[in-house]
Structure formats: C-alpha cells, structure tokens
Length: 469
Image (cartoon, rainbow, N blue to C red):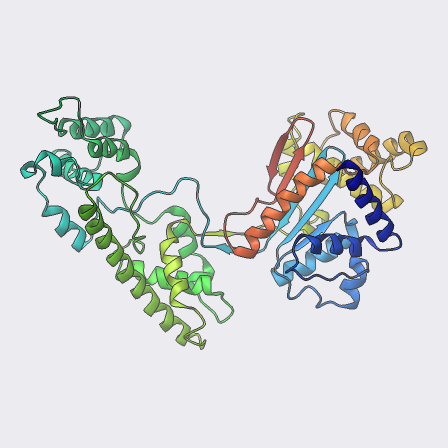
C-alpha cells in the first residue's frame, strides 16, 4: 500500500513538471468531485485587476492566499466596492492567519446554539388562550393529568403566580418559588407511590427557558430599525424588503411582537393533546406569515419590482427564523494599510499584554512590509537569517511608530518567524484551509455567522484569538 502511494505521488510530481501552481491545484480539486467544473488563470492578481477590472464582478466569495501587500490592497478595494466577501489566508510556520472582509452580509438561518422556544405564555394569542383556559387540571384523572403537555402546566401556574404577585417571576429566587408551586401540584399514583408525573418535572425544568417577557430581541430590533430597512430603495436585497414587511407587521397586526415561529419543543404528553396544541401554534404562525407575505408583495409593487421576485417560501422561512436574523458588517482590509484612516487603538491596547495573540498580527504585517521592500520572506535563504532579523525588526518598528505603539516587549517572535523562512507546515495549512472552507460555505449558503474580522492561530499552544479592526 505504501509503495503504491509513493508511486502515485511520484507520478503526480512527474505530471506536474512544467505546470503552474494554479493548474495543478485545479486538477487536484477536480479529482475530489467529478461533477465540479473549474478553470485557472496563470496571471498575477495585479494584472487581472488592471487588464480585466470586471473579472471579479460575478464571484460569490473570493479566497486569497499569500498575496503581496500591493495586490491585497487592490483586491480588497475592488471587492469592497462590489460587496463581495474576501477571505485572506496566510500560513507561516506554526502560525495561521485568517482575515474576513465583508461589507454587508445578511443571514436568516444563523443556527444559534441555544434557541429559545417562542411560546407566548405571558401574552397568549386568542386561540391559544381559549384552548388553555378550557383545560381544568383539577378535574382530570391521574392518567390524563400525567399526560398534559408541560406548556399547559406552565400557563396554569403562571396565572396563579401573576394573580398573587402581579407580574412575571424575574429573579432566581422568584423562579425557584414558582418551581415549588409546580412541584406542589404534582400527583402520585394511588397504586404506586413512587410513580411521579414526568410532565410536571419537565415543566419545572422549563421555567428558566420558557417563562419570560415576550418582546422583540435587541439584535432583531437593531435590524428592523436599520436605515436600509426603514428607507427601502430599489437597490435593497430581498432580505431588507422582507424585514420591512416584518417591521410593518410588528407595528400594526402583531401588537409589537414578531410573527410566531409555530414550532413546539418535544414534551411528554398524550398524542392527541400535543397535536392539538401543535396545530394551534402552527395555524397562528401560518396566519402571521400570510400577513407578512401580503405586505411583502405590496412593498415589491411600490418599489416597481416583479411581485414574484420574492417567493412565499422565502417569507415563511424568514418568519420562522426572524428572532435570530443577523447582519454582519466588517471593515475594509485596505484601510489597515492607510495610517490616516486606520484606528490602531485595539493594537495598542492588546500589546500591553505580552502574551496577547495580537503580536502575531503585528509580525505578519511586518513580514508583508519586508516582502514589499526585499521581494522575499525573512529567513528564506539560510545565509541571510541573521541579517533578515535586523531588517524585519526595522519593518516592524516602522509599523509600530505609525500606530503610535511602543517597541515589542520581546524579540523572540521576530527570531522565530525568520527561522520559519516563509515555509508552510502542512498541518497548520490544513487546519487553516478547513476553517476557510467553513467560512466559504457560510457565505455561499447564507447560513451561520462568519468569523468576525481577524482570526489568528498558534499551532504550538493550540491557542487562537479574534480581533476586530
């Protein structure tokens, strides 16, 4: 097996002789999936930008690796104007660097780690309140009592609490008291004193997550009050048009609340009782989405756009995930190279900690300046390692003076990067490539929040840090 592998590698090397790196990379990538098509251009980025300014116009996302400073600035400025995300990767020795430039990126399906259920127990809508009020726990048999959905239990005991206290439980102590009330309402099977009601135990556990004031989350409110949402134009994407329809819904039909999600968490319950409750939420969510859909069509007509340019399915998806929508806005990479507009206060503050990961960003910027001046990596040639250390220190010092920072606390990092000689380690590059691939998928699918701004990885300690410039 090892012999075959070595033969395969030697064949690939022989085949790749005389071919550009772009051509070989394309061939290797196409081998991964026969349904994928690819192409390559054997030109410097600067040449492409000068000769074909519109080349990048139709890209969804651009990934750049190991670009020199001048090329990176030109590419950054071009993609920033086009509002196309740019992912810059650099791997030197044990250090990996990833920088994401995104001007305005909207996300509907953010997939939060902890999604809060939308139950509206404090502000039940008409059909839900009518259904919950019709249930009498005291008149139920033990079997029915032990199969009531915990949502009903929470509602009943929350009603009692509000009658006594006048408002929802807020503090930890108050919620503990509500839990004790629910616990006191549990029954025991006359034939089996050990058999407790699992649905009541679920209700007790759900107090912290399911009971609270129903309102528009701050992150959603900031989106709905955004300039692009308030003042729509023909240039606005479908995201902002639907967001405006949601805003109008909240102010008019929704009573200050977002459209209902319409989904229920799993709970111990009789199938019939659970499905009935589920249908009530589903019907209300469908009714809310219908109102938003009609308003979206009206807005499209007002903007002079075709009424079918946004589908009803897209509106329903937006309504289902509206409580977690997100707008990602970043900064232009080119601005980091302009001392007149670049705010280096974050660097100054971070460098006060000698163990901060910011030191790697500073050294990497120094290496870029070194490349521009000497057309090589520091330490690239064995007989130039010591002289290059002095040169790299001078490049870094120039940057620190521009940013108003003091000198580096330690020179160890400079020596280490010169020892790397611009080499890439396959393990570090593989880690960075996997991370960049995830970010590309996020931008292409418009799902999940991307890494914000700058990410630095130290493979020696397995530490990482993120920074915003």
